[in-house]
Length: 127
Image (cartoon, rainbow, N blue to C red; front, side, top):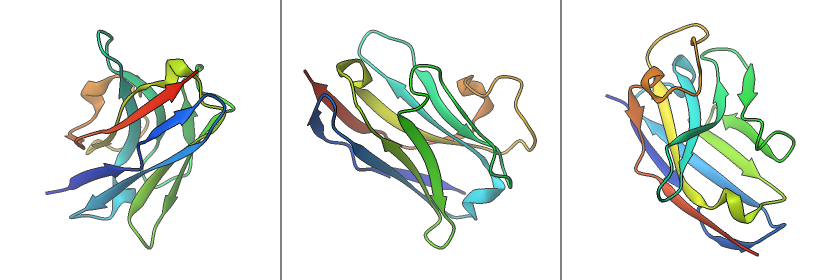
């Protein structure tokens, strides 16, 4: 069974940068569709970005396009979320998710497309 462990969350000032990591254990991470989600207190979980299984096609939420970048390290079986020009509204718990289904999802930002979740890592951006 696959396990996901996020790390890299921190408190930063607006305009700063962070890189989150998601270590995938148990299976080759590229066999899964992968995504980053975030959730702020009182708000629904929202999709941040998505990587299709086995290919390098990536999608991002409009709110983070041009500021966030998803990448991976095959040797480390790790997915990354590079975040730059951070804003206070980016403050949230960030989660890594993996899905067993292959191919392009109907809606990549729907959390029901994913079967496995990490415990989350907190990002706090102060103004």
